[in-house]
Image (cartoon, rainbow, N blue to C red):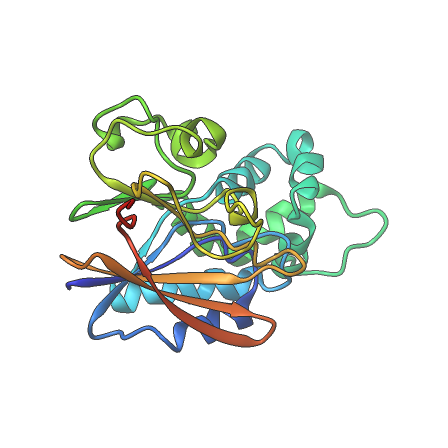
Length: 253
């Protein structure tokens, strides 16, 4: 396919995802998800189920985000990672996945076992999610890449899932344009907006619109091989917005 439709950082906002997907042309565009399907929003399970269905039925690409990595850690060692998981919005995921009413004497271990028994196929699928995807001159990862490597796939897992300022604030050595989520664009845009961010060097595209935060939005971008423009869709306050953006900085007079 000559086009991709890219979405990141859904964070349990199922209805926003459904609305955004109304703009996806399934016969013309490959879907790429950049991770962070869970936590904060109330519909983590429904988001996971839908994304998995799109992978299974339409060959969508679903990458792992840092929140999925932390979820897997919590499932493995709940006695040590529960507070951490709750601190990053995991209580919403627990509520979405839990299979019984928690009593005062219920243990975390019982909760984890019940989730594994009920949703083992989803957990197994999360474990297999890749960390990056390449398409033409684009490189897709949840957080970014090591800015000092010329081959972005040589970046460590920690960088692909977690990197922030070291990647966003400095030019990177790779020739590819890196499309990423993880860092809300309110932290990248000079006007602190939730719109898609294009770096001054035009080699980074940040799309995390902070959908799970007040005033945030769920962004999706359409990229076309050989085109210097992208189409940007955004779901914000129940509205579906669209705009065209150039991928090349205007020449200075």
